[in-house]
Image (cartoon, rainbow, N blue to C red; front, side):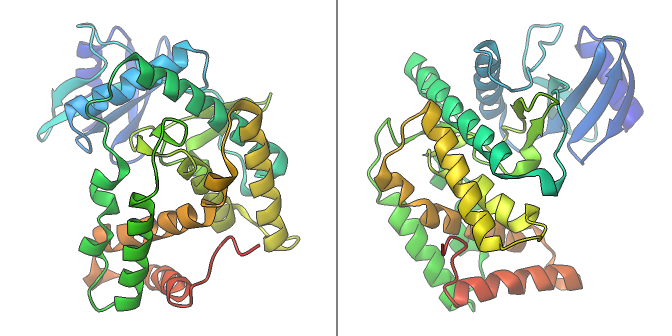
Length: 312
């Protein structure tokens, strides 16, 4: 498969690729005489959705924002079709600078910088939306991954009640250009690279969507609490410090009302439900590992006992 992809990429792009190796089942690391690149090969989103996504991220790049640019093919396209076992869509990115930080380095200082970068992202998103209507990138609630009641089993009545209440509450929040618009949508810390000068690059905009801007603050807070705390202190204090840092950083670049900040726990609950629903969506119920069962039960306890990750 890698050899076939290598041949296709050399036919399609003005790059002299020498090696292709898989990183995930849809992302490939590509070595070339001109440097290193990543090819995304997937049908996760439609052609129109992917084209709108990479047009948006290239706009961000040309504004000097920290994203990886998509490379035009020889035929001048940002999204190309290739046929492997079936037709797939391909986007080629130049390798982004920076690395994934070790977990113990996701401290308040770094997360303040992330908050600052998110604030700038949302300012640029507003500018981009003002240039023309977004036609193919969905509102959050139109994406399959938010159809919680389709995937959370009917027997889990109390969790379904929580899901229904969260979805209903958020859908009924007032929208305005100040509070709602185009955002990254999946800013967990694996989608942020940091270079030696602490400059940040955001990657993987495949889940970009229209949502309340506060959701892009909720996701990294959830991600840091869930995956990056490594002890040596009190996790509640850690939660307070990173939340304060992200908000302060954001407010250096963009305005956010106290009313929307008060909704942070609600949007963290939305993210928790999103993750739990994905388990039901993608995991094989008949072949769950002990670790998968442990994780699902961890979530079930939180929902059924009405535990909040932001109870501080």
